[in-house]
Length: 214
Image: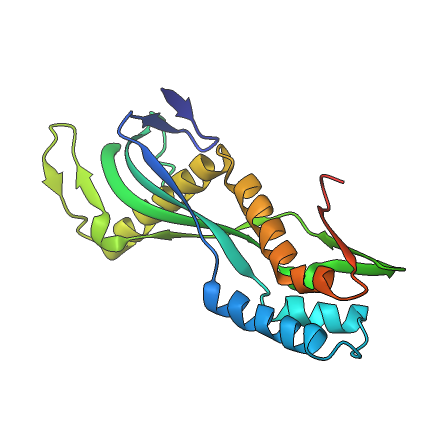
């Protein structure tokens, strides 16, 4: 399947794309935070539950990267303009690139909104965002039209090719449910974090929502 960028670059995506979702919890951070909640409220039931205190608990887990997408891809890049080379440094008109990328998505928990009405605690989380794209430089391989492997003669060429890989990986990630995975994982994390509050003698009800899916 081919598509053309605004700058004239034609990208042909081949079927050698592999994507693997790895959903994980940062266990140490959550374990420590969960222990604090248990100690603070279950062992000291006289402690007042307040928005300030609950936000502090969330802050301990802020910027939690909850989902990761691993991409192994092979793509053909072609500058289709006959009049001008649109790439800034690359002088080749076409090449094939293989790369391994890691795309991370997560929620900044410092931006969560918390309200307490009676015995109901409502936590509204901002939607997850893609936090970053990392290209493994050791995974990069470049081939010419005859499928002969080559190396760039200038570091600027290699750097620009790596930026092409980043852009490609980001587009692939945006076409998946990576952000949705991160939203649901973070919702589960926060529910588990505040679960001790539902175990008090006079328990609270904890509701966790995502801001774009109320």
